[in-house]
Length: 410
Ligand SMILES: Cc1ncc(COP(=O)(O)O)c(C=O)c1O
Image (cartoon, rainbow, N blue to C red; front, side, top):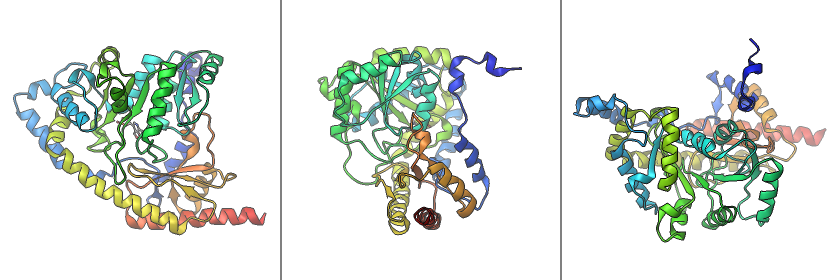
């Protein structure tokens, strides 16, 4: 069967990257990996989840937990989210909150809702690779979102027309960016809203890491600033705030949410009805129970661990990286973004690192819509012990230093 012959055009952009092939080597136990951007499984609230499953099933809701349910999501969980949103400056009601199977699903739905083939999505350079994967299925063009740049608004419109469509949205991970670890300042967020207003497009605020701030001042979410621009009325806003329980509680339960004005939430509900009817009823109930009982304590616990690992990694980089290498200083999240000398290729470095020093990371190219950024790499500290961080960064620093020395000698 010639599958290529029958695939839809959208399938042409669904390609496994060569990096994934390299990262298969991670299964070797001797590898120190800074590659996976996942929570540390040792920190999952296993007992609370187990208790919640037992309680939900034994309660009068036991049958409902295993039944089909409404597409909008489990109401008590949506009510709990309304309370959490209020704490970060987002006044909303349950009608503005829509539960999805992880925040990844929101990205897919928003791609489906807004992108016709050849429409343009504005994304940062680099951006979350999973967002590019989600949007790619809708065959968009990408254009660069460079916060605070004074690029004329007309040039976005012109570029999009040249690509064969219109600018449809701007997507940003405003807090503890995956991959860079950086946080957009308030000024950058206001700039983004100004741009979106001028282009009359929505803003997708990916807040997957929002709860994981270790130090520094909290910045209001883009949706909070948008609401403030409209006299406190969320119904007049253009921002989608995409939240997730994956980084705080457990990704395996697959529960995320989006907060936006009711009109577009109703549209997302229609998409969900056609796609998977609703997210797992029992998992939403379990998340609701776990959130009500241990959320604050859980977030406090994981922040202490990740914050320590972040600091340890920054100290190790300071100690072991040679001159000519730079990196970000994240105030939260799971990632440090390293910029290598201009000529050095992150993917080649990964191949060498796996072969010679048993260290893994993700080359930065995969996070760039145009395949640029070859001299960058992403390091994740979320699952690494002190020893792994010290040894892994020492070995990686030595490898980079030796490649620089070899280049100088050549
Ligand atoms: C920036 C960002 N957004 C969204 C997601 C998807 O998370 P989930 O679907 O588990 O909520 C991730 C996961 O790594 C992420 O890093």
